[in-house]
Image (cartoon, rainbow, N blue to C red; front, side, top):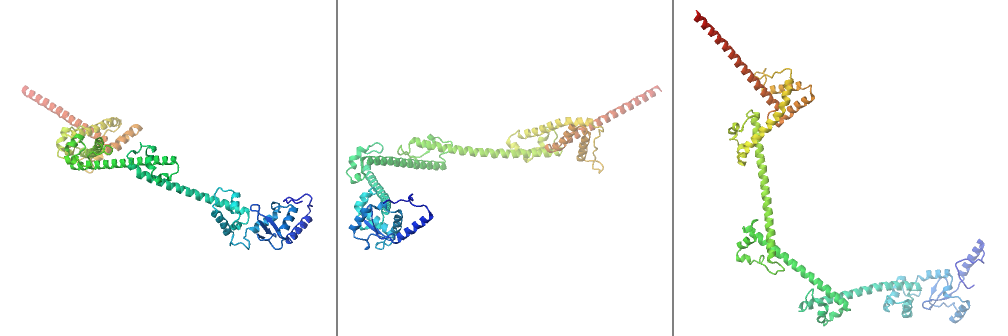
Length: 514
C-alpha cells in the first residue's frame, strides 16, 4: 500500500503459523536486501545502507543516481516513510563512525562538530536553519552522522557558549566598574566643589567626563548609581575614621586620669574644678587631655570621662568600705561569742546564777581578754551581753519552774537526795541532780503531758543553758530546806532559853521567900 505501520493489518492472518512464515520471510528478505539510497532531511545529502552498513559513499552495486531517482519517484516512498525497523538498525550502526571517518571515536567526532560551530561563531541564540546554512558545506558537518546528534551537540554548545559569554560580560562590567571607581577616587578628593553627602552627580559630571574611564560604563544611569554608591561608602569610611579617633582620644584621656590618680591628684572625692586647679600648665596642654577638634574630644567630653572615672573610684571605695565593715562585724561577733562562752563557763562553775547582778561579777571578769575585747566595742557592750545572758536564762527557768513545782507537789515522797562531803556512800551534786530528775520523771509518769515536759527540760535545758532548770530547781529547794532548818533550830533554841530563864526566876523567888 506504500504505507509503513507498527500495527498488524486486519487483512493479515493471526495464526501462529502465519507469524512464523512472516518472520522467516522477513529474515530471508533482510538477508537478500540490497543497497538503498536515503536523504538527510536537514542537509539534503544522500547516504546509503544495506541494513548492515551505512556510508556516505555510493556503493558500486547501485545503479546510477538518475535511474534510482526515477525508481523512487515511482514508488512514492520518502525517507520519513521507511520501516521503523530499518531506522532502528540505521541508528545503531550510525553510532559508530564509518570505516572512512577520519575520527578515532564518537567523542572525537562530536568535538570536531562543536569545533566547527565555534569556528563559525555560532551564537547561543542562532536557529537551526541558520546553523545549517552556515556550516552545512563544511566537511566537519559530517562528523555527526545524524540530525539528532547534530542538534544535541548544538544545544550543548550553545548552553556552554551562553555561560561563557555571560562570564565575559560580567567580567567586563567588573573591569568597567573598577576603572570608574578609580576615576572617582583620583578626581573627586581634589575637586573643590565636591562635598561628600551634598554634591550631586550632575555637579561634577563635567570633571569626570574628560577621562576615558568615565565611558567604561556604558549608560548614564549606571554611572550615576556607581557615583552615589561610592559617595555613601566614602561617608561611612569617614564616620569610621571619626569613631576610631574619638575612641583613641577617650582611651588617652582615661589613661591620663589614671596617671593623676596614681599621683594622688585625683580621688573619689575630686570635682572637675578642683582637679583642673591641681594640674600644672604643662599637664593642661598634654595631648591626651587637651581639647582638639569638637568632633574628636570636646570639653564636655572630657568632663564626661572625668565624671565616669570618679564614679568608678567611688564605687570601688564603697566596695572597700563595705568589705571592711563586714570584716569588722564578723570580728565583733566572734568576740561577743567568746565573751558569752566565758560567762557560760563561770555559770557552770557556780559563779553566776540567774539572780546575779552585773556589779557582782564586773570586777571578776574585768581582767579577762574576752571582756577587754568586747569593752573595746563599746563601754556598755559587756554589761548588755551579761544582762541578756542572765535574762534569757532566768526566763527559761521561770517557764520551766511552773512545771517542775507542779510535779514536785505531786510527788508522794518529798525527799531531796542527800549531799555529802566526799564519802563514797553519799552523793555528789551531779549524781544528786540526776536522782532528782529521775524522781520527777517517776512522779509525772501518770500524766503524759507533764512527763513530756520533764523529758524536754532534762534533754534541752542542759544544752541551752549552763545549768538545767532541774538543777536550778534542786538548788532552790535545797536552799529553802536549809533556810527552814536554820529557822527551826533558832526557834527551838529560843524556846529552850526561855524555859531556863523562867526556872531561874522561880528559884530566886523561893530563895527570897525562905
